[in-house]
Length: 267
Image 1 (spheres, rainbow, N blue to C red):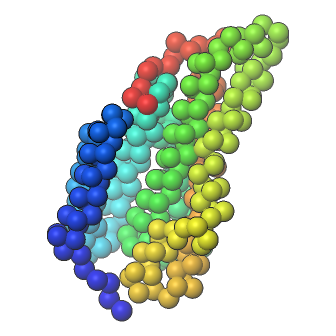
Image 2 (image 1 turned 90 degrees about the vertical axis):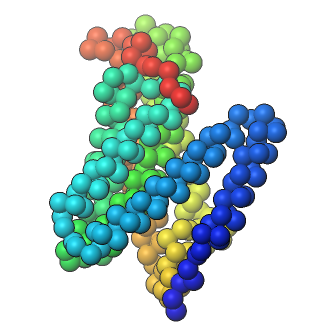
Image 3 (image 1 turned 135 degrees about the vertical axis):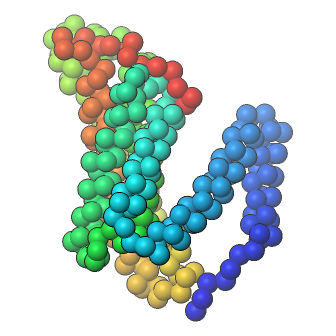
């Protein structure tokens, strides 16, 4: 069974719903109308361009091109992690913590899935590499952004509490321990909810796409289970790495709280 093709008119009808939502938010004075339109436009343009790029990549399997595309995806994800925080680390740290955390988590888990679980030959086959890496990066990015935003914002608000603990003789790890744990919990909530409600409340994206493309539902379910488990591992590993690095950066070598290293972000 071949999937039904969508015409420009079909996509325009779906876009009208976003425009209606933007109009509603403007009427309610939420200040989100412009952001919705810009985000919708960006997503449409970026996905169409990606479709054209992947069409070329599928025609010639080249590890250099795969690596270049993966690097672009990682760098953009690192920027988005930094940009969505109300309080972010200044300088290269603001971008580097999230980017390095996603590299260590998403890339390693993607390679493990391709080489050991799915056993694709070659491992850089774009049909498998790009969708898997994209899903892992996207979800890990969200978890890291939530965790780091929670960490830096709470540390900013609870500065007197942290400094009082330091004065009582606690080291930096103890002084910020509960804040760090709460930040990690916040970052893991989305994937925990996604796994808890999969197949009951929601039909996850990859399974939906495979079913629409004509794959047997049970086979699609097995792939979706694997993806959810990989996303959970990637989000957890990435969030733990990012939160530890960021919380350590909030203190200097003499274990003094250095909130002057934070910069105001877009939030």
